[in-house]
Amino acid sequence: MVTTKSDIEKNIPKWKHINILGRNTIDWKSPKVFRYMPISRIQKMFEDNEITFVFPNLWEDPYEKRYYNVALNGNKDAFPNIACLCVTTSRSDSSAAFWNWSKHSDETWLRVQFNVFELLGILDTFADRTNARIYVSPVNYDYTEDEIKLLHEKMNFDSKHMEKSYIKLMSVKRKAFRYENELRIFVVWDRNSKELESKGLYEKDSILKIPFSIPKEKLIKKITLDPRQSEMAKIDVMYRLNLIPLGKRTAFEKAVKEVVQKFKNGIEVQNSGLLNGHECKGIPYPPAPKKNVKKTSKI
Image 1 (tube, one colour):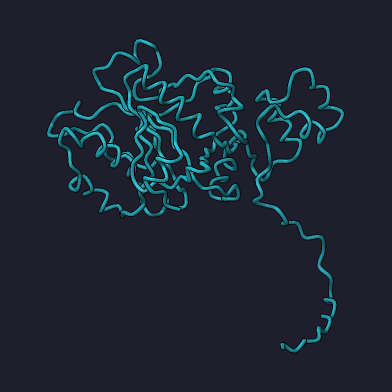
Image 2 (cartoon, helix red, strand yellow):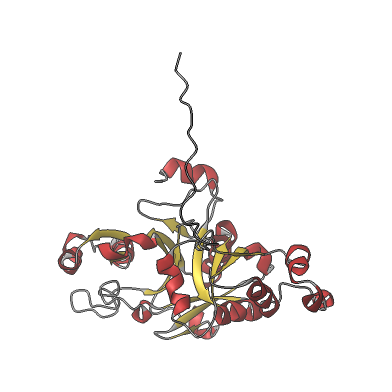
C-alpha cells in the first residue's frame, strides 16, 4: 500500500522536526512498524528508558553502507552525522527469514511492535532539545549492485538538497532484500554540534541513545515470540521484561496459562503463527473412500 502525501497530512500529528520521504508504505490511519530484537536489548531499553539507534558503519551489508561517511568533493565533513533505527512495515509475524536470526542465536529473539505516533513523538521532542532532524525513509530495493555504485551521480548535492540526497543514498538495498519491507528512521545532527556529546548520548561510530519518559506499554504495543518457543517460554519472557506485576509472580508455579491471560501488564505477548497447523496426527492407510456428492443442477 502506497500512502499519499494528503493521507499523511490528514492522519499524523503536527511534528516540528519529522521529515517523511519517498514512497511511504505506512498506513497512517493505522500505522504499525516492527523490529526483531534479542531479548537482552529489549531488557536494556526498558531498564534504561532509552531507544538505541546505530551508526550505519555497523550494518552488515556493504552495499547499504557504501555511501556512509564518504567525502563530497574531497570534504570528509560535508555530510552530517546520522544514526538509524531499522524497522519493518511487514505485518506478518510468520516470516521464516526474519525468525532465522533467532534460530542461529544463543538468546531469544522477539518481534516488537512500536506505537508509531509515540515513537515519532519521542524523536520530535529529542530533536527539539538537541537541534537534530528526523527522517523517515522507506528503503528502496530497485537497484542492482552496479546501479548502486553509480547512484550518487543521480543525486543533487547542492546546499538545499544535500541532506535529503544523503538520506536517500543511505536508504538503498539490493533487490535480494526486498522481502524485508524495511523502513529507516534517521536522527541527523551537524558534525560541529556539541549538544549530544555534552549529554553523553552517543558513542562515536557506534550508538546514539534516545531517552524516553513515557510508560513502556505506551511505546511498545505487542511482543511476538519465535514460533519454536513454548507457552512456558512466553511466561519466561514476560518475567524477564517485567511485564508481570511483582505481587502476582507466585502464579508462575500455579497456572501458566492463567498468568498469561490475567497478569499481562499493558503489552500483549503472543506466539508467532508461522508453525500453526504443522503437526500431523497420523496417516490413515488405505485412505478412506471419498463420499459421492450428488451434483445439483443449476437453475
